[in-house]
Length: 204
Image (spheres, rainbow, N blue to C red):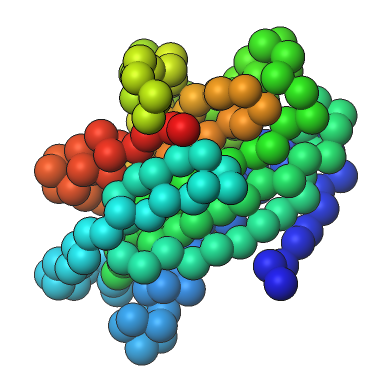
């Protein structure tokens, strides 16, 4: 059974996904490099190995390429005053995490979609103490056409240790779900790896 946690306020919930992936990044670095600190990891010259595979989640309605076998997690969060499930798949590399988070909405109300999208987007910048940059994007649909998305990039520091992080995310709503495809890393991955991740993202 997947672990579940509840967050009592929208502010805490909006940052939950970012904190969750940052935590995965720390654990992955510790396991792979035998307990070395993230500062030491940043100084090493090793390159992550990208072992790409297509991951299809029929229950959550998406497919995407992941650079490693993903883990799964599930959380209960509170957004817009309502408890909602958030499902996450994450692939761990030495210096980065590639993940997709899906929030199940109680309805497909466009106002609720926008509120959840705006909350998740603002949380990315708040988590790193930087405003970030946003631009429009399009996520293809398996049945044809595409859905409007927001491409967000943020660079800043995270946590009490002020660790340098780069966050790159695509946010998109479709029906009763809001999706967040995200990369969190010490430094931006090579462009071809980033492109493969985001360009492979498709909704059912």
